[in-house]
Image 1 (tube, rainbow, N blue to C red):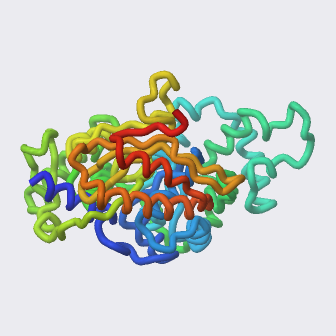
Image 2 (cartoon, rainbow, N blue to C red):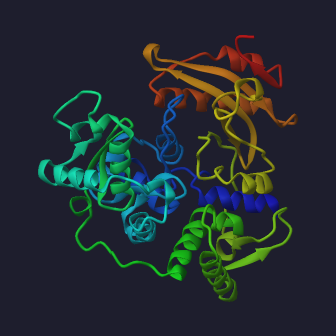
Image 3 (cartoon, rainbow, N blue to C red):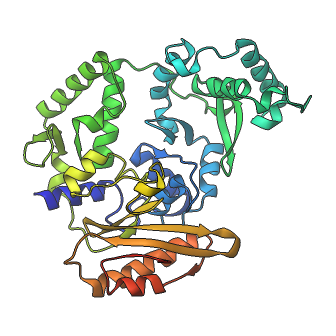
Length: 391
């Protein structure tokens, strides 16, 4: 049963079959709409998480697709459990959080200079889409607000409460414009009830994962109102036969998509090197329970306490996580470095695994625009279970 659940999870995530969402720009849009969100991350040791996640699922993916989809008003940036790209069709479900920010219910966004916010809004309205550094064209001295925390926090609050939207990114630099210029005509602006919001979270998780936990449904969502609404939705979905509760997966309060489970195809032995922020692995408890894979990213761990490396990437092979690899893209000299590689399964068929790993790493290196891949590290690993290069 566990293997079947894993295969269901991989199929729902678009990691089991070739071109599950199509290719190129349309495939990128379909992937985001199916997954419900793609997390944005600033770390650039290798290609950033939002690009890595989409590259793993969409053939012919190009990072420029995200700006194009924003300009075409098919997706938008906001907060899911973290900064994310979201389908524009789901815009109304961001409205409750925007209202909380506007009403001062989030402590981080209190004590923001309201006069400065009005000044910024007026400037964007008059001058059009603007970067943060564009919003001050006067004094560039120490007192200039744009380079100080108050100005940045004012822009962030205007974004979080829905007055400004990101209309473009150049690398990680955001360009802002008025929300009224970024939203498509006819977009639904009705504020969802708690039950409607819970149903949105449930349906998104059901569609993107197939098998999931109660904790996953309410990830970073707090309060009795939200818990009660989600319980109402879950009970209704169980009663109507959409999902059933499982008691033997190693985790309590686990649910599975009944129809999808019966139709899940067998997963082959494809190999994927995934982002630490990939939708499949971001819920660490579920990852441990379902895949028996304990994982955490170690860039937030003090160097002496790291076990696997600063930015180790999970290695998925078939329906199992079999190891992790720490890589770095040296873009100046187009070299892709393998810093360390650790395998977990001593029974791994190395004759098939290593050619698949080498092929995937070369493709990933090319995507990072660092085609020079040092395969000697992989060759050494054929004879050892783990390896740290340079030692």
